[in-house]
Image 1 (tube, rainbow, N blue to C red):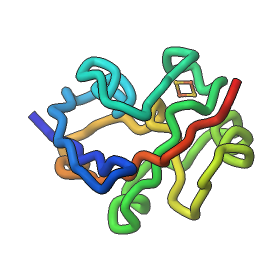
Image 2: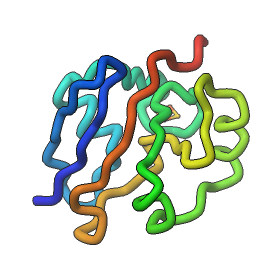
Image 3: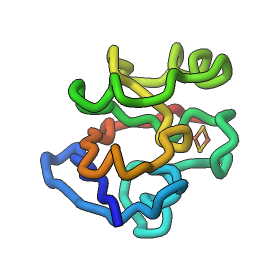
Length: 108
Ligand code: FES
């Protein structure tokens, strides 16, 4: 099964098994990963599942949709490789993807 490596705000890393066709957010929630709030459950309407994707992985992802782009405009700690983890769907090609969890998420 593919894995994703989450770098936490304190610098610790957590490697999660992510079944194909699951979002990174779903695996983070399943394993109780700190910092991925995911208030809307994956609907791309809350922005509380923001991650900063490793630059080498970012180009391999599907482009963000309009709703995701709009939310990424307002998330804290936005960077050029920011994505909503609920919109990053695991494939074998993404095995080993690295993402950083920001210290703060959008306040609702
Ligand atoms: S879980 Fe709400 S936008 Fe990702």
